[in-house]
Image 1 (cartoon, rainbow, N blue to C red):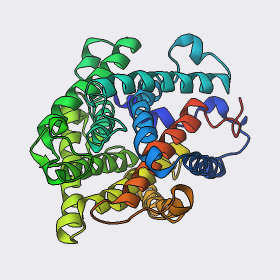
Image 2 (cartoon, rainbow, N blue to C red):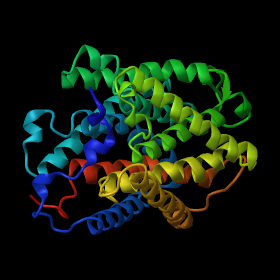
Image 3 (spheres, one colour):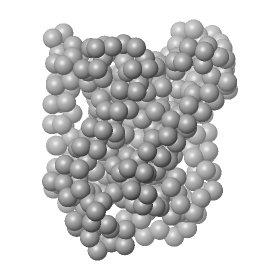
Image 4 (cartoon, rainbow, N blue to C red):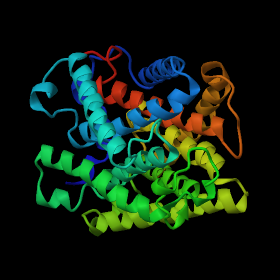
Length: 369
């Protein structure tokens, strides 16, 4: 497996569509983004605030690793019979697979890790979110190594990725997450608290920060590491990328939470998730094509500017609409109701819809082939 397995390769413009598109970039991306945001807000408004923040978030987050397998590993071409279908049948079929896979994962997690405690508690929600973050690390940074060195069979890679995400994710979750500070909360159950090494919200905030920084590095094609041939093969590439992402994440996180004194949850939502969600705009909706004639690192820096702008502006639309969609929400400590609602709205609803539209449906009906 090589660098073509990263998201930039997955989302690159398909030359087969040249001359056959209904609209071209960046107009296609802007129209698609507006449509996805409108659909996301409409779907969120169909649920009560509590139901959306628990059951809906839990189920959709369980679908995301399956989406990653379908789009980034299988390139929307496996199973072969599905990859050969025209749009929108192919996109709807891939979406159905993602929902089915997510449902199976959700049932397993709810029976085992959650121990049938419902509605899903922060113990379970943080676990499945952490597994999504780990999936991105495994696929983007490590390119599924060492499993990819043993087999290139799509089904084995896909199922192996899900096993790594949830089994290794469980081991790391129990070792790292500590919920003791929340012992007085109504949801708290001592038997579900893994009593790990780091306060839970701080650990989650830093983990989200690493993926936000990872996506920013993807805009730069992991420059300057990509220019050093000996750092482009696994496992050296994984080690080098991990070091780069962790160092930059540590600086970003320390500057926000220590330097500026921002609490971990607000920093995670307005800083880390803002960066992560903003990076999805040039990566997914503009298909990595913005400033394409320019070389790195200038192209990546300009795309990062677009990502920062999108990450600063778009979440404010959700924040302003939260009371209208889900009723009154408390912002700030101790509950962080509106902050956590925003995190779910961006990453547990809009992000999967962005993937479904841009990857599964290939921008149909804006782009027809």
